[in-house]
Structure formats: structure tokens, C-alpha cells
Image 1 (spheres, rainbow, N blue to C red):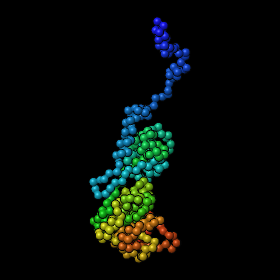
Image 2 (image 1 turned 90 degrees about the horizontal axis):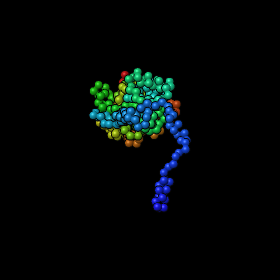
Image 3 (image 1 turned 180 degrees about the vertical axis):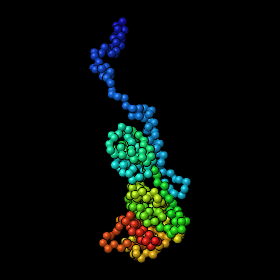
Length: 319
């Protein structure tokens, strides 16, 4: 009996006794937690998952792909931040969507971005901040992100072919090792101004048609074709076989620009980077190397300025 009594006591001692007071837990449990956030902002809610999925689909729908034609498309580009987005929209840079963060502070730049996008018919997409952080890889987007569609590059052969088809001598600019998109945009602008037939850039280690290039081109990128060359040297050799003279710009060139008769005929002019100039293989491929006289004593010009001078001279000779 004594053993039974002890076992009953042990079982009884494991049970919780009465709690004296709730420590305010019940009162706090009855208090409100503020207004319920919208469904899109509630973690795990079906509407938030749907909003995230919509943004992911839009971000992945313009990934790099090879089109059916002979050219290639770049990857889509994102411009992040309130000032960059507004400036890109002002410059009429192509856009497929403007992402606006949910519950964003509605300042003047946000209002202008929304108005510009609406006026141009660019879709506005609301997205939670974590999703914008993800698609921008953590950039300081300030709640605004602009998506630029992939640029569709032409094939280098098409630039010369289209000029010949139009009964004109091709005038093409090629860039060797130019990595600043603003220089590319300036060259595109000069090609448009002086009646050129396009620009060729290498596929690797070179500037492409980014938002910066579009902006510097001042809208002319919509009318001038830019082609990408897998191997610039081979592309230049193909131009030579098609009857074009390949002219390289070099500070130590054998011919001065004013003496370059080749500019009056089918020609491709190659400009190198401001620091390194033409690469060895490209320089060896050129039929002629020309220098731009600089009485002021400057050692070199950037690609955008040099291209503008040569294209003007070519335009003058062809007039």
C-alpha cells in the first residue's frame, strides 16, 4: 500500500498546479495588432505568391536567346534607382516594364516615372521589395526598376549587303576593344549624322548596346544597325573579300586623314581604344593605317570623337 501511495504521489507531482495570474498574457492577446496588411504584403499568402511569380515571369521572359534571323540578341538589362529610371524614360530608351515597389514613398521622381511610363504605354508592375532586391541582385533600386528589352544585333555581313543593295558604297565603323558604352553611343550618333551604314563591335570584351549607349546615341540607335562579330579579325577579312577597304585609325599611321582617298569608296574604318589603340591582329589585317593630324599636341582621341572626324571626312568626299 505504501508503494502504491508513493506512485500516486509521483504522478500527482508531475501535474501542473493552478497558475496564479496570467502575467498580462491574456490581456495582450486581446489587444488589436493594427490594420491588416493587404494580401500581397502578407508572407505566404496566395496573392503575394502570385505577385512574386508575375514579376519572375516578366523578368525571365526577355532572357537571352538566339532569334530566327542571322543576328543575335543580348540579355535584357535592368536600370535601378529613381534618378536613373527617370533619365532613361526621358531619353526614350526602349523599355518593356517599370517595376514599382509596393507601398513606395510617392515623391516627385516616382510620380514622373509613372507618368512617363504611362504616356509611352510601358507596363507598370507592382512588386514587393524582396522581389525587387532579388531581380536587381541587391542594388539600391529605391523602389523603381526599369527593364530594357534585349537588343537585337545585326549580322556584320548584312551591313555591307544592304548598302550594296541600295546602290551605295558601304561606310561602316568597327570598334576594337572599346569598352565604354558611351563611346559606342557617340559612334552610333556620328554614323547616323554622316550617312554611315552601321557599326560592328566584338562579341567579347567590348561595349554593347546598353542603357548608357542608348542614352548617348540620343535616339539614333533606333535607326542605325549595330552588328556583333564573333571574331573581329575574320569579320574584317570577310569585308575585304567583299570589296571593302579596311582602314585602321592609329596615331602612327602612314597616311594622314586628308590624303585618304579610300573614304570615297566602300570602306570599313576601325577605331581602337583610347589607351591601347588597335590590337595587333586587327592592325595587321588593315589595308591602310591613317592618322588624324592634331596640331594641339593631344596624344589620342577617344573612339567617339575620332569616328566623328573620319565619318565627316567620308561624308564630305561622297557629297
